[in-house]
Amino acid sequence: MHFAFQGRIVAICGNNGVGKTNLLDAIYYLCFTKSYFTKSDQQNIQNGSSGFRTEAVFELNGKDHQVWCIVREDSKKELFVDGDACEKFSSHIGRFPALMIAPDDAQIITGISEERRKFLDALISQLDQEYLQKLIQYNKVLQLRNSYLKSMAEQGRMDTQLLDVYDEQLVASGSYLFKQRKEFLSQMLPLARDFYLKISGLDEGLEIEYETQLNQLTFHELLKESRQKDILYQRSLSGIHKDEILIRLKGLPFKNLASQGQRKSLLFALKLAAFELIRKNKGFSPILLLDDVFEKLDSLRMHHLLDWVCLQNQGQIFITDTDRSRIAHQLNGLGLSHQLIEL
Image 1 (cartoon, one colour):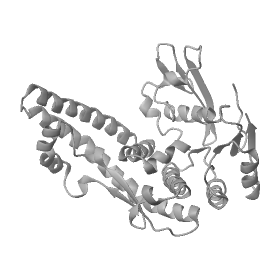
Image 2: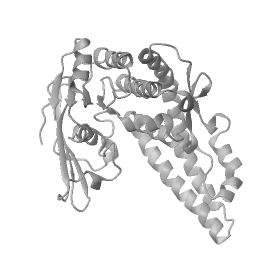
Image 3: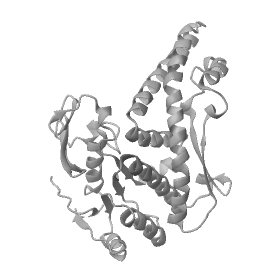
Image 4: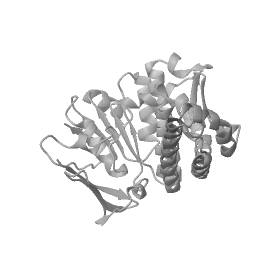
């Protein structure tokens, strides 16, 4: 299947199940070497096929770049950029920055803290290659440390020398991650509040705050203070893997009080704040992928969202919707020329 995207704003319309989301995910896949919606490449292989190939031409700074990714029947994955094999996939992240907004993203607002950390890590990794490498290192050491804590309990031993080594390694990578998260969120959270105000059209008393155990203690002190509990509970209870983004509405937990429209407005606000920081850092707008985002969003909030996304931003935007007349009405109402693809 082949598509030619000729407009800056591309509206993709059709009934559920015809492949609108798959089309956006194919673009995302070539930016991140993985699907936004599935954890395993095997889930993206068509029934009866042994693998798949995804290919696209990206235009960046006036130059075309051909990117293709192949997943073979033995699950081996290969990535090529302009004909050159990419040996380290992590080095590709951020080359063609992109941002997806999809219905399941509501978990960023209503889900556990891990969902917000994943969201944050994915954003910063597009801007900072070292951050991505430190994150990989941190998670690997954390897994080893947790396994060792369990083995200590199972074998009834109290040899903490290896724990000392793991702690040093956690501090080495975790301190960098903390510093970058703190700096990024100091810029992102005020932007998110501003975007929420623009989308909702009124001040609803939104509060967003970065909560981390490292605000009170250094990483060394934190691990030392927590060690006995870690041994008792057989897992690492302290560190940047416990960071949280607290969200309140009029002083109360946001997810308990907010309506569907308010939750979606906050999701857009967080994503657009991230979009703006990526744009400023890279010097150009990332690709914006909006998948079925207009359900449960009133026309005023939809208008405010599209006004900024399409009028005040000059990057390329892909929007899917089941209702052709709804998206056409909104885009035409803003005087926006667009390419319409019907599936």
